[in-house]
Image 1 (cartoon, rainbow, N blue to C red):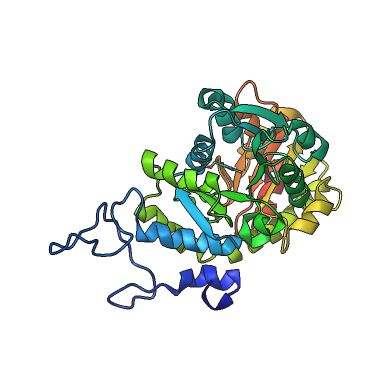
Image 2: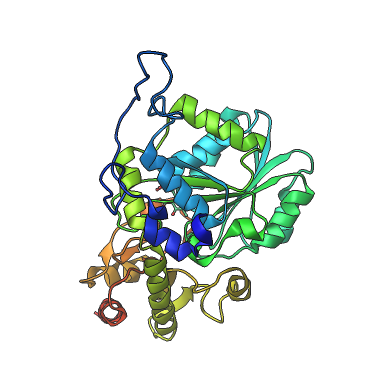
Length: 382
Ligand SMILES: Cc1ncc(COP(=O)(O)O)c(C=O)c1O
């Protein structure tokens, strides 16, 4: 990393990469799908640049920044978070066993349930935050990878990353962490023993709800699975677009500011919601009463993230009534943008959802916290 910069500097400076040829203080956009060879000897004009399915300067810059933020040595970017997850699982040898956390982003679990068998993978699911359940799910010598998400959608159950990595390694498995909600600003799972970090870069890394992207990061790029993932992306083609990578670099320049601001506001809102008579329970690792507080305090620094959920007394009808009175916080899926979003997960997940019916998931943005609180009070008391 340039000059051993602090990650905040790395993000803000976008690696100090200037626009070649004119010194523009932001990196340029290079959308070429292919790259010329020299006529005289047929050598590449720029070594390493052959064709856009593997080679793009904007994607490489974004990958370098994300690897730097995570303290990793390599990053691969994909056109969405789920395409990164799918690509990683497709890179596992046929016949592998995988242990996957049962509580987590709905789309991840759904994809694994619907596709693992077809790919020749056997799967054991285990409860989030339960190390004994994780240990029971492992098949020593057979399990190729353990997948956790912490804090986990939508109840924000916390898993001890170092302890989980220790169990995975004892069984000969790699440990992958969906760290979308923590962001590298608040936690660097590789330093805690994880082998792979995943981000839906659609969320906090980009932060402006205008890019879909997924990132995988490792500090062991020589590992067979990482090499297979590089080949998989190249041969099947899910690489991030150049413009999306350019936007992502632009978004990441403020990730440290946005994440700390959202975390500070989420802490205030969680504490106030927990004291509100119409609220049954608040799920937020920053609350001293939260079951994941002690572990989060140990493995996260600088805040507990911008995501919280709260259960409104009175079930689905009461929760949807709260939403109907809001004027600032937007009802929409997704998270990690500068604008606050609220979601009734049970409606989004459909009839088979086991999410509590009164639960509202709040992605806290960077608006003034008193405006957010006034909106929530309006919703709860409207
Ligand atoms: C924690 C988490 N992981 C993965 C994903 C999937 O990412 P994407 O929507 O970028 O495909 C999401 C999306 O909501 C998420 O919240």
